[in-house]
Image (cartoon, rainbow, N blue to C red; front, side, top):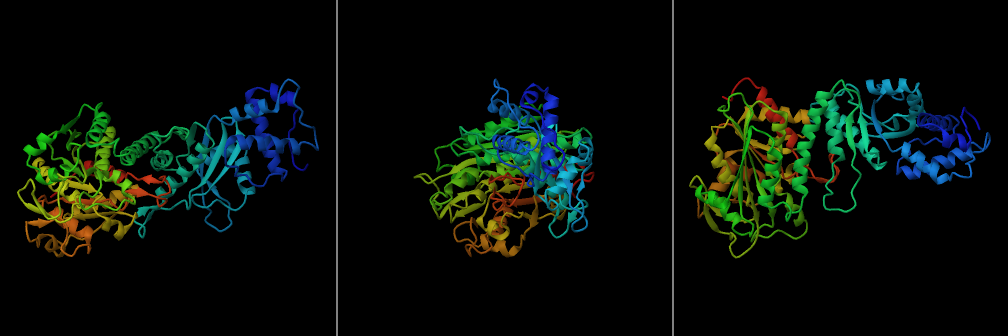
Length: 578
């Protein structure tokens, strides 16, 4: 056997103290690499497969030196279990930047350099031996390098000085960190290691977001669950930024949880109770769960016309977060569409894919989760959250195509398509939002399939009457990587919804599908008089397949972090909206 390798008898192995055992494993593993016996170091998969492979390789490689002999009272299985226990304690994820020159040596982060020094340069040497330099988002796993971290995942971060990409409209460096850390943490999870320390990679907030978002998966109703992995900051230099990132990510994960849960688990009342429970510990938050009788008193006829088709009673959720020093300061008002299941009503949707309509309350989920996050961050501004919650179901009491209903502001609406129900809820909620002398009104809704057709999952469509408001939303989205794109609110679209034979306005444009997202926004504009209003159509970003690498497949909870960052920017803005 070529190369330097330490070989002990089985008795020595079994009787070794823990630090000696781990050192032995590391030296053997390192020796095998140097001896050319193992060229592939990315030994993913479950730890049991790895340890068996390791013992076999160790035994075969030692044949030219001493044979590895286990004492008669110790089985090879017990030694394998001992090795597994040592490899099952804590993982470490470290970042490495791409070389500025093709074929050049990779550059570790500060944490990576420190760890490499701790293991006498073995990490850098192994990384070099393992093949070409790591590309962005790719990983390699090393085992047995250090007793505190038996499993180390090195992740590719891309270019070191990547910043804001004007073509992509996001901070590329932050996105690279989120994506790389997420895949590294998932590999630790695949090894069933319960704890992972994460390299801050020069941006602890983005690293924390990648870790917490990347590990999240809805498995509440499964008997077999993925192992829980707790991510922690490696080092203590950026603990405040790390905790901020954890809070942002947990806010989005709350929205993902609410959107992913089955509609029979998240009914209107259960949604409201979940949010109330999340906010119960904050003394500066008041939650009002308004019943159907209150909705009737408020003359929200458009909202009630949708709700009447379901056996589930409607709820109007109202949240008051008073974070400003002056509780009388004009609040930011968030409004979220809360259709907890949308069958389409009498204008019934196709059965294929209808199950995804459990997430048609994504607007309510994201704005309420943003308020929960704002409270956790103790943001110094006042926020009011409004969420009309109901189901849209077909029944003998449901809206019929051609029916005319009256909104809170007195305008009549011809319901030409009962599957265009979200705008009916929002019409009444937006009217109610004007009671609060709002600094700005921002509504979010999975409103139109046309928005998905227009932008896909790349960005949230924003329709707004305020350039000041747009600038804040846009700049917030660059930081979070959860992008927004401005859409038109032309009078061209308004004419298509106000040219209505039976009422003041129709709930669909007269040219049917043409510009559907734009005519829906034009409809909402008929119920807004505030100078700073934005409508976020989040239908295209409702779910994730594989487009966002740090989110698993399922409901995405977007754009919660952008809403939080927007609120944070607004709280720092020294100038009131003019």
